[in-house]
Image 1 (tube, rainbow, N blue to C red):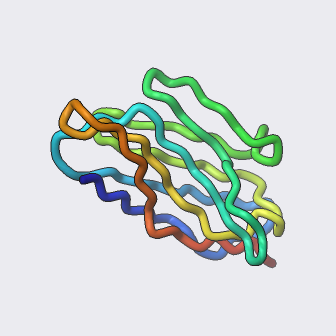
Image 2: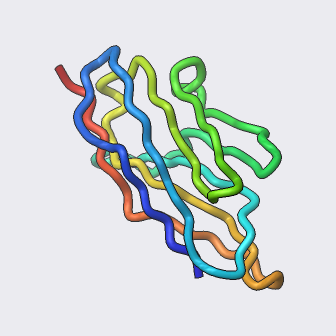
Length: 120
């Protein structure tokens, strides 16, 4: 099993910055993809950014140029640097990981979510 714990959410002003962190823990696992998703009230959960083991990254159009995803593979941690956030970025942000368990089974895991509110 893998546990994902997010941190770093909170209130941020438009034009400010915020960094989210997500740490994966457990035993006998190897992660190949970690991602950040978000879900605003009355909206579907959507992908914000993804990083693949090896460093390849993908971003939603809304995040390009403002958000940066990075990873520390040695510590199974992923970060989302949010620069120049906008009120439309207000949502619960979820960490996601795709992990190989005990060298046999791929499983998807979600964090509990962290609230990000962009407001002046």
